[in-house]
Length: 365
Image (cartoon, rainbow, N blue to C red; front, side, top):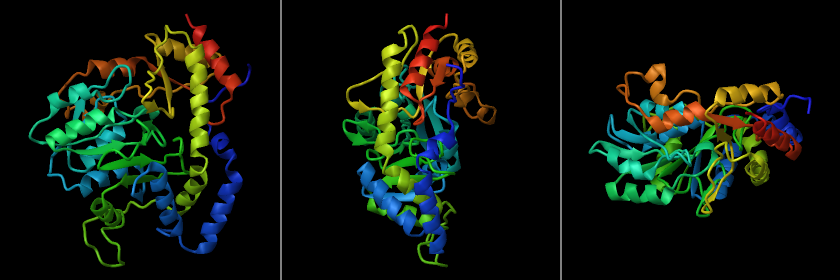
């Protein structure tokens, strides 16, 4: 195979939707209503139905979805929120921007998700919430997490940014905690053509407050009930997302098929993602682990295969947060960050390409 296999190409990803997008653009443009119109309202209903929740609130980004969820819960200032130590930095930033303090807990080395067995040791009288992150498209053990939350009277905000359509025990991401925070960043399985996010919930009062908070604290023009934000899902992005939502299960199934090729063909000397019968994984990311990760990445690049690292630096090692975690060490997180490599698994990748990638992985010595 001589051509370069891109890790991601948003142009190729969205080619299949181009006619639908053009029609959506024309509809929005001609409507003359570009902020919080019918497209957003209809998408909120459709996405809530897809997730199995009563409510969906469209916001400007996945980061804002975390911030607004925490704000709407009225947690006390500097409340502690438990977050996995290997999460993407937006999770940490969301907690901080909401006026809370992130407390890092190690993940399970097999699932890469927060380890429920380690959560209770980090709970103090200041702990008010848990932010489980469904990393790479695999849901956390939400049964165990919800039991811990009930025992200690904690709120649960799911970070579903990589888990659109993922399930744990046939219940979808965003339908377990007090709220679910979604991102529609363009690379997501359900990606927009720009930034966007949403919050799902079954709590009517929480949903009502979030509808206010995302729009300057207002639902009626010039009347402000809360100190709010400007964080609204764009009308045009909502129109695009409605078109793609119809095909989300097809997208997820294609990625699951490609993942099966990796599972069947990559040798077991490389650490592949764990699979559990109670989970329906959607493989936003397919990662493997290798002690010689950087050499493997170079090897694949020389074979025409582009890869990514999710993520090269753990949160507690980031310069911006060097004083926050008081030189704490998180060896499991550090091992994951040092060895993980993400292989191509986009909607436009073919079975043949993924078989070739698996062969090239196996050829690494």
